Image 1 (cartoon, helix red, strand yellow):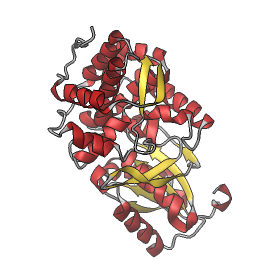
Image 2 (cartoon, one colour; image 1 turned 90 degrees about the vertical axis):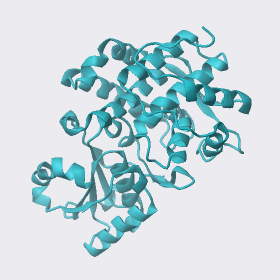
Image 3 (cartoon, helix red, strand yellow; image 1 turned 60 degrees about the vertical axis):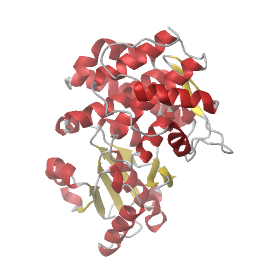
Image 4 (cartoon, one colour; image 1 turned 45 degrees about the vertical axis):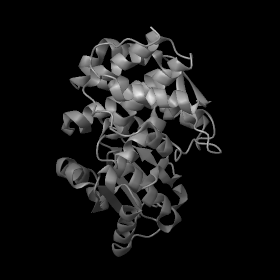
Length: 345
């Protein structure tokens, strides 16, 4: 890809109307010498599909983009995933730079080269591995995030603590209020720790053939929640919050995780703020949605489950009866900032 990116290549910014209202002027000033052209797309999860990709590609054609072009993706996870897939596909690959403007994008989706869009049958089922030329993360971009969007990103940071950084998790236990107040030093600390961890994992497993699977902790449940509610109920991080609680409950049921660690994880998630309620959807329907997950092998669901805070195990299979029980428990579980007792406690 890098060989195709030339100094005289045209620059195209892909962003969304609401992000561009806040940051368009700043981005245009930074790129003034390159005279960028702007393509705005809907950044709702419901618009993360092949139709949006096609529209963006056709806009590039009409604007005269060639194989030397560079896309600068300015926005959150949806913008980054769509723009990344456009860059990977247009003219069989053009330049790509990410400028993430949400926590989820800064610590997760903009790093590692995964791009993709949703199908009605499931999340991120069409895409490509396409590393960007660079990622520019600035905590200042987070100042314009609405409170709910900001909280949604914190769940991904909690994920990094559970899967491989117990020190980060302990920091969150003692400093979550500072993070939620958007204290700059606390934010920089947790963002840098999260980025460093994802960078280490991706550098060892770029194409998700092994170690990288740990990054999907909570996501098998989360993707099922998102798809069965038609991407209209949860922000992605909120679904991951529920997914991590479900995965932790399953780990306790399988006697992999101590009830005490499950309680710490649940308390941390609840302390971030209220989650949208668990949907009134039958366990069988959620399990059917999970079957579309990319980690499924020969029809067998495989989960990433915690063994302790700071370590997880990949490829864990669960009996359907146990899975149904966990899903039913989640449906009646209160989500408050206080701790909840484990049924094994």
